[in-house]
Amino acid sequence: MTSEGEASVADGHVAAVGAGPGDPELLTLRGAALLERADVVFGLSEDEEMASFRDALLQHRGANTRVLGPDEYGDDPDALAVAKAWEGKRVVRLYAGDPLLGGQVDNLADACRAAGVEFELAPGLSAALTVPSYAGIPLMANNASETRLIDGSGDIAQLPGIERQDTTLVVLNAQGEGDDPFFDRVTKPLVAAGRPTTTPIAVVRMGTTTKQTTVVSTLGKLASALRSTDAKGHHVTRPATVIVGPGVRRQSDLTWFESRPLFGWRVLVPRTQAQAAGLTEQLRGYGAVPEQVPTISVEPPRTPQQMERAVRGLVNGRYQWVAFTSTNAVRAIRERVEEYELDARAFAGVRVAAVGEATADALRDFGIEPDLMPAPETQSSTGLVEVWPPYDPELDPIERVLLPRADIATETLSAGVQELGWAVDDVTAYRTVRAAPPPAPVREAIKGGGFDAVLFTSSSTVRNLVGIAGKPHAATVIAVIGRETEKTALEHGLRVDVVAERASVASLAEGLAAFGTKRRQEAIDAGKPVLRPSQKRRGRRRKTV
Image (cartoon, rainbow, N blue to C red; front, side):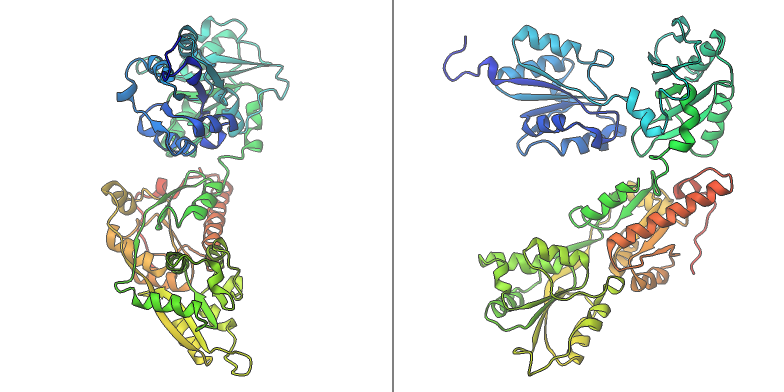
């Protein structure tokens, strides 16, 4: 019994949540819901290899969820979970893969039962089934009538029935002892038991992640295949998932994950995380690992009077048009409008132009549908001028256009609209200043070829990245959003590999993916390994075009 005001047993709750084998998108809906409602979350390794996986999972946590590190839960995490539950907390402990596989969760379940604490298990996808799927290997195919799961840390030679050729073996956590190569502990017992040396075998490292590497061979040739793979830059480490059986023969036909156009490419996106959200999601869809490195910091104008007059003029009917040339301009006007406790209705009676899709989307988020945009293939200030209507005093009751923009923006739009007969209020809505240099490891990766590609979304991102971090390495693929950005890149001594067909970040990512697809197919056609640009960086020198 508990006294009044004291948390009862029923108030607390402990959930063991399986996080899956490495791809954070494989977290179950139940697992995500438990994370969102949790008061306390802990678990998973704190090592660098797991950092991005753990961080992605924790994005599902609630606003008030407290994340505990190893120094807080110590050597007895099960006791901590029970103690927090007794305090009335909802506790989530994360486990890699599935908590029940290998008995990971047994002690926690026993501790909760002994303490009378409510316990729940949210299953996770296991590497046993998921990794073969991500490698393109069917487990029960090509006359395989049985699939067995084997703990690679044990003695495989003592297991009965391993000689059966119609049985597929999935060896988890395959590893050796001391300096012994882990594959010997799989291949030698199987050959000794009677499996032919021609039996197909696959070794999958870092399964379901963008570092996944699959090596397909036979029991007799695996050792040399792995040595050759290591020499080509695909280092296979332990532990790994090993699949032995007839389904391995289908791997080349069914591979889908590692054949994505930018699989495993580390791509530098010189934008803030907020600006790059859609772009990074698109890149991940192509198999890339995007990393945001801001090159520009957006600051308010030094004097606010211009913006204040612009908003008053907007409300008082001073303008026939408002032209937006960036999402930052939309954000600056929106913030100032909302400071006056106004909303999108302040634009009633005003026609709105947007330079491109990203800017248009920012306007739509504010509740405004643009009236004018350039064609998709000419989304730029020049393209907007080309479609801008000339001023007609008989049709246009007001001749003035509001142009909120950056302090360093070009005069293209302002000059072009004035030539069409309009009067322009050219207002500094925000200032762009060079961002602080990125951390030393990032600067070293940029100059040393640690990035496979860099996406430049404007001329200023070229100038600023070179200014704060140096020129990208010769082997790094350079992709730019348009011809002006290409010109700036060439002026800075960079070779441009990709120019977007349209002036949009979506088209930029598509162009890089097409480049990656072509590069991959050329390697396959030539019978060469498919290597990322960063794996071919030695001895290369960048030549400008």
